[in-house]
Length: 226
Ligand code: ADP
Image (cartoon, rainbow, N blue to C red; front, side, top):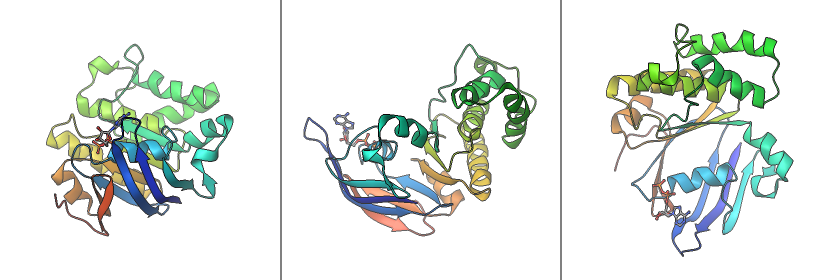
């Protein structure tokens, strides 16, 4: 589904962020991407989202070279990938319901679709009772679950979760991982970056380790080995 073919990225200041990365990610996989700070994880995710161009090599999503897509097609392509970040990125002046509705409106959904789907997705992330809370009325773990609900509401093929547990205590981190696993079980491909050993070990799926821009390990049922 996702193919990196000899992808290198050298930033204009001559930092080599990725160095000949080749990878295949199949539909339905749950990938943990690990590596020390500066190893190239974020750059790899930006390559996939077509936010950065490779200096060398190609990135394919199914049969499309993502760096050859035209502007309109990039917008459509990015809708197939939901994103979740360490800092949640919720709109502070909007309720849980409105944060998710906003993502649906942006994708052209009708009010009827929004009214039908938002409560349903909030049940999936165990937040059925927090529809009308604003972000400041939610705990960190709850905010991240709203962010996950927003990421999946338009039924993307892939979820990219960049350090989603980075700001959470172990109990909330566990809840977030549990929900990501549930979403994966429903068929969505997950690509997660994390520094959290407990998180990796509890997932028990493929672990790709980056070091100085290179893939140095690719374990089918990995344990955290840094
Ligand atoms: P990670 O996410 O694993 O911490 P990054 O992909 O953010 O790693 O960074 C990889 C390397 O590229 C680091 O040395 C970082 O300093 C450098 N880097 C990242 N973004 C830029 C940029 N926009 N310009 C220059 N160097 C960058």
